[in-house]
Length: 143
Image (cartoon, rainbow, N blue to C red; front, side, top):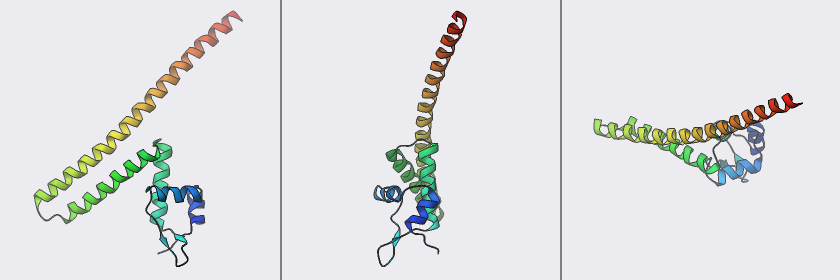
């Protein structure tokens, strides 16, 4: 499996080395393996995880705390999926499906809250824009 140094990961993701180390420190990404000399060695999977963090931060507008919660829920879902696959009886399978559904609902609720805030901000800006347009029309009529 190919390993990448932090410089390569920074170039690939557009993040600074400091940001990558910080994301590791606060648990947004798992600590990478290290060489005998202590150099961080990242995998393709680590790079993909960083790209997901970037997308959630930029596209969804999540704070770092929200990101951590969102990604923890995602890990929980993956854990329950594995448990579901390994379940031997229908009751265990049912319980794992309920756990997955519950975690998915929490993620959906987070997204809905974020979207609601974004729509409120958009509405506020559109109202301001409309007031400005009205004032501009008034100024042009007088002018």
